[in-house]
Image (cartoon, rainbow, N blue to C red):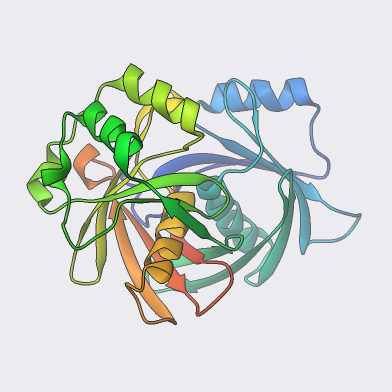
Length: 278
């Protein structure tokens, strides 16, 4: 068993989604080999999976590598891995033993193909106001008047931290630009992973996620940010759990992605999506 698959996560169309590599083998390669494979694949992350014990197909030792270094966890590569496992070993529940601990991935399918669902750690939120909010808005060339007045800016966590900015106007989201180096510096100091910039829609949100700390201007699909947003919505009383919202991300950069967020009354937030071959 030794396969390397290339998939786009959070889409059923290979023209959309967030690309990831998935390498499945009887044993994990050594670190230098994983790094070389990830660099050759060239996506932001490649997941490497091997059975946790001989003959076992329900539990997998899992590592994630960018083209430059190992990454402790990657949400979109986890969705891609779930779909890859379902194709190879059948639909069901898989446990991925990652550097951040066990991650449960449930797989199934619908009319658009196979899907995978992951559950976050318990989310939490923190205030974002005053000079920190002003500094963040300044990197976009914005002031408070672009924000939806009935929504509270905050920082939300579902494994990593993401500021949540709810804009009043979809046109402002479409025209979003920012100072890459200034935002990168701010995010590094604050320990933020992406910026979840959203506009409410009838069934959820349109979203864009700047990712300069990853060396990327914008992420086309961010499951960790989607989970954090789900936690924010519950904490701020914006949903009546159990609830489901749909996040559409990547449309403004030409890689449309769909992330479905299930928000239970308590506990982790569930994020699901499709994955398509590249």
